[in-house]
Amino acid sequence: MASDAERVKRLGLNRQWYRGETIEISSIIEQLRKHARNYGWTEYSAPIGVDLSLPFFTRIQPGNLNRRRLYLSAGIHGDEPAGPLAVLTLLRENQWPSDADLWLCPCLNPTGFPLNSRANAQGIDLNRDYLDRRSTEVQAHLRWLETQPEFERTICLHEDWQADGFYCYELNPSGFPSLADKIIHAVSHVCPIEQASVIDGRESEAPGIIRPIVDPATRLQWPEAFFLLNHKTQMSYTLEAPSDYPLTTRVAALVEGAKAALKATAN
Ligand SMILES: [Zn+2]
Image (cartoon, rainbow, N blue to C red; front, side):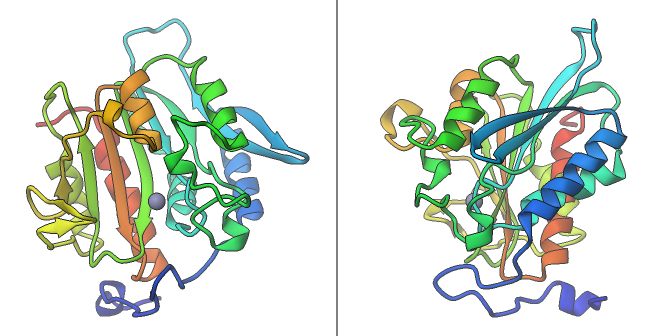
């Protein structure tokens, strides 16, 4: 068990790319499926090739249209293991908001993880493919998504190999009450927050909070969050754990951040 000081200290492994612990994704997906089954989730397996599929889980209370609809995805970059592990933790804990229906995509890039690669096995960065749709993964994801309703809020779990701390992107063009402060506050108990004023080339508004002004129409390579914002939601959060810290710290950061983002109110 890491001490408190070790938990919040950089490992110093990452140079040029992520060089930390990796996960055996097929075993993680099996565990995800097992917990989802045990807790009554509905699974849909979207085929992306021979013997390979994307697992999607839903938990929807039939006949109640007043419930909030929340979407959570992870594992679109194969060098970001904390995302699928965070979803696994959330599924295992089974403490979801009681007033919400839920949509989970815990691993969107199963061929990237065995290679510890951001891209899929064909070298495509799936999180830049939501306009072109060249990859079978994004095609399968969108075929399924297009049959689903709109969401009150979407949350995408990521890691950043260069970051000094946790941060999040908020896309909220309609100006709904922001949840970013709550997300940062919740994560600050388990993981350092990025303090840089420029994060990933963008100015932060407050420690760990980036609110990019984006017009998806002007961007040629869409991340998942752009598709969601254009077609499925008016409020999107992308959570970024710093992947040079211990894996347990990053998983805790994404778990606490996701819980805060899934909660009902902005107050
Ligand atoms: Zn990522």
